[in-house]
Image (cartoon, rainbow, N blue to C red; front, side, top):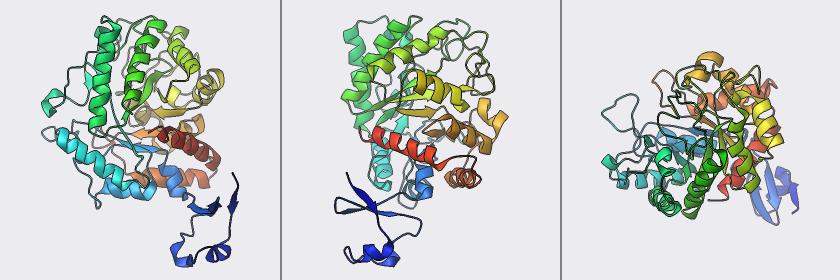
Amino acid sequence: MNVKKLSLVALLFLGGCSLNAVDDKQELLVQEGATVIEKTLDEKIGSMLMVGFMGTSAPKNSQICRDIAKYDLAGVILFDMNPINHKQAKNIENRVQVARLTQELKACSKDGKLLISVDQEGGRVQRLKSKYGFYGKFPKAKDISRLSDEKVKWHYEKMGAELASVGINYNLAPDVDLAINKRNHVIYKLGRSFGADPKEVVHYASIFMNAMHDNGVLTSLKHFPGHGSSLGDTHKGFVDVTKLWKPIELEPYRLLAQSQTIDTVMVAHVFNAKLDSKYPATLSKKIVNGKLRGEFGFNGVVITDDLQMGAINKKYGLRNTLKLAINAGDDILLFGNQLSVKSMVKTSTLVNTIKSLIQSKEVKLSDIEASNKRVESLKAKL
């Protein structure tokens, strides 16, 4: 496919385009006779961001709608619990309202292919609860593994259909952590794992992903390179799994990477000196670009766990976190604006900070553009 960059003067002869109509920060391309406007630097950066926001609606004058339009955001994440006022909803009140909200959000984007995500695993982790008018009774992974495959498929097909019915197109699940540490509070004790056997985990995760795909919903395996052996909670602070982690925790990712059914992988904030002696997985080039991409051959989208969690936020600060995450090979940087009022960050602050990292050559624009291509390929599945 032949694509040529043209000067503004040349473009004036291609259909009466005026200088005033062209953003001087953009390059115009002609592709098989059609004019294509390349993304601005702000949009390239914004296309790496998934953010949480306050509000049960997104009219054109709302901050989130303006951010989506201005920065071409990769996506948004929805929550039911409001971290500022627990008596009010953050984004999820009822079925009709969520369906309207997702329509408004998509209308804010240039092509309508905005990633709208939730955490909907089943059990304790499901944002679409029965009290909001949703089914809300999807079993936790531990209980799913006791059901027949036919019943498992029924549950997950129903889940996918319910997400799609209200315009949610990206489920940050399934959890493929192994149930190998009975003292683990965030995975084992919540029943979020399908089991201790990697092949069994892959079996149920595959049913989950296929059911989501049948309903046009993308998925994300989590939490790479394994959170099942941990004792701590990365929401609260630094978690070192070095002494507890086992190589078998990588098996679900290796096996599923071979099947090429993975949409995205969510990388965890756990520190594992066996894989990287300096950085936690989210910020580790050795783990993301080395282990996941290089060794396992996964070339899809890598999304971070929430970068406002204590494991990252308390130790690295915003600028260094953004620098390390981009250099590690992460494609979508998740800022849920959910954990506390103090940790909330404006999208403009994220974009401007990354822009300064490019200007100081601490981050390469080429890495951001490579991430943009992977995200665009992901969105093409929608």
